[in-house]
Amino acid sequence: MLNRIISPKGKRSLLSLLTLSTVFFIVGFSSGEVSIKNIALNESPEIGFTSLSPNGLLGGEIIPASCESGNYHDAPDFGTACTASSVCGQAYGTIGCGGVCSVAAPSVPINYGQSCSSSNICGSNQGTIVCDGSCSAIAPAVPSNYGRVCLVSNVCGQSNQGTIGCDGTCTVKEAPALPSGYGTPCQSGTNSCGQKATGIIGCGGSCTAVTPSDSNCTTCPLPNGNGVCNTAENNSNCPADCPYVAPATPTAPAGEGAIWTPATEWTLTASPNPIFANTRTTVSWSVSGATGCTLVGVGAVSGKETDRFVGGPALDYQSSKLQENTDFTLTCSNAYSGRKDSKTVRVNVRTIKVQEF
Image (cartoon, rainbow, N blue to C red; front, side, top):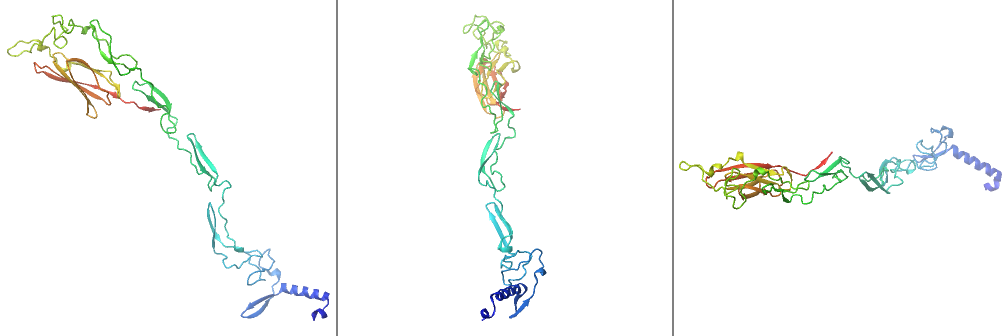
């Protein structure tokens, strides 16, 4: 009917009027009745927002200032807690306009997970790039004394020099080589009467034994002697010429037994002394008037017996390989007179140590 009454131009005018009316009037529903709210665009409480909300139960209302036009400002989960996660962690926020969480997931470095290494003077360790952009690997530990000078010495005190390395030990592992034959028994040259001393090959590569003085010479070429007990001879060093004579008694005069000397006058030496651990020394003694002697070596700290030897009143004895300071006690006696005494000499033993400077 309207198509017949209203001309096309009139229809366009009527459509424009209805559109304008829609802008100025809002239909509201309250208590089952329809009410019209006449709200002018320039009356909006927002600044910069003039569009009407096209969504929600109250479509057509001015949108709250917290949300831009076109968002679902009245979404049922608006303001509720939310999280945003990534391989680098989790962030916490609330649901905002448009149903979007207010926080973004923790950022992930662009090279996350790529291989990396951490290095120092002692090498490198492998790892991967982590969330803070750094490498997960830790460089190898460096000893606190790294680079300090160290020495490795042998029993002769000769040393090779190195430095402390990354493993905390000296870069030089071996001491200088010892002379060929070191520690093996040897004898000195002879004196005018053919006597020799016993020693060992020392650090200089030569024998430590010293040729006996000619003052030790007697006229007693063993085993028969020359039949005369001279001043330098006695029953100990020349029994062929000086047979044993019992000591003086109330009923018998003094004889050869009177040559017995107390321990304070005995000759008891150790050569070389000091020595290094695991090497030997030669213990020598000479006791006038004794018919027999026993030498016993005992560790000064451990108290363990290291050597025991039974021999005559004058002898050179090569010890076992010693590990600590050792006391050698010589006990000599005269089987005829019953005299007996003891004397001790200590052999000091050094240990090999690695020194740092």
